[in-house]
Image: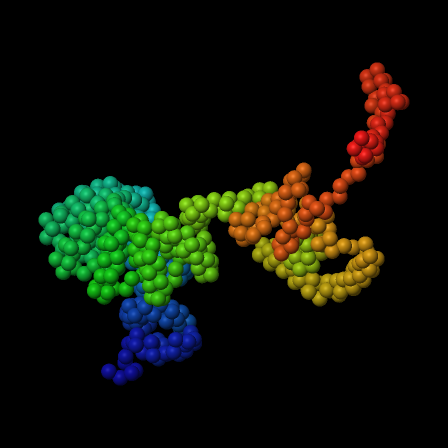
Length: 618
């Protein structure tokens, strides 16, 4: 066949074009075949369908646009092929856009709608899928495929109620559910934790319809709700129906054992898999390790972890976390630390669960020092501690007789968060950034001015033009605000800063003769910045363990305070100025009474003299 008689370029020829080819280049490639395509539109449908099968959605869209540009008549099959191409690459928005562009020109058929619903289903866009299904119902175009895709969309979004309602609507629409309908509805029940509804659907299936996926969905629903016994019955039913359970079936059953704390049954299922030549995957073994973890069987968990290479599997972070957690249950702290280091050597990034499990193992073995070291390692790894971390640290300190440290930590946080009434942070940088944050708020005033002044200040805009004008005023104000802060404000700040600096130097020189060093003041005053802080005094004694800790200031007990110049404590009771009581006078003030009573003048002052005879011992 010569090139002139060929119906058009094939999919590979279009794929031979560069991926950056423009619509004009695609149009030039189609021009020689415009006459044939105009005579027989099926050629265009074949090319678009081939591009869709090869997942070249963008190229299919370019071909469709080129066909429109060269005035080829488009039909529903052309558009449906492009929608199917977008569906295969999970571009639900483009599929809906293509469907919307057909409105008023080309009437979509059931295949078009089903492809669009399938695109929404792959991206869990269940609301859009249901909207399209309603359109199909109004046009009497819906079929079993439409409902299956809609149920699957709800299943992926964990909307089990909507899935069951759609399943019930199939009977109202005189549609017979197939195995895909049952499987999708049961999977949605599994994600919603509704194992009883899943079993009800399974019981309603016609005899011989159920397949392995059906049982997998039912067993997974039972596993989510911790029903291992029902999972075992379903496995037995599969054997009765001559269906061979696959790795997903066994993994779901092992997961049910893990949820139900049945570690022996989980290991028994693993032995059955080996006897039936079904190799477990990482999910299966992780569930078994987690079952051993919950039962405190850390030796079994370690054995399963070591058996992973025998199955050509590599442990992931979940595997290590479960094994370390099992060691914490069995107080095998040294094994937990070895697993923690092995996890790092395998290139796995630790998380809070990993460290919490290792710290719990050390805490239960009374290894407080190691627990604190792990907390420092956790901080160095930039992992944010959670409530479990703090609880483990508190228990470790308490078990080691370190209630003082825990008390200091809790009191310090309580004091800052609950007792301190306010905190003041004053600097030019903070003030500058506050002004930056005010820029969008002040810009709203400019936008409101444009909005309120519309048709009153010499301009009259409407709809999107008014919205764009308000947005432009808002952005313009922000730009001007930032320019002023960046270029204008620093000019005045330098002059003001210079004046303030000169004033501070002048005042400092005038006050210099009267200033005293901190050591001189602290030696005479018992109440200092350190001695008045109870947290600092506790930390000095229990955390830093100073030889002479900082003494807490209590009025009337200054004589008990000790000196430790290395930590800033200079006060001593020897420096207390003794009051001279040899001769002093107390003046009694005038006390007005109810009957205008006053002390006699002889009693308005009391003068005390030290007995001279007492000085001479006579």
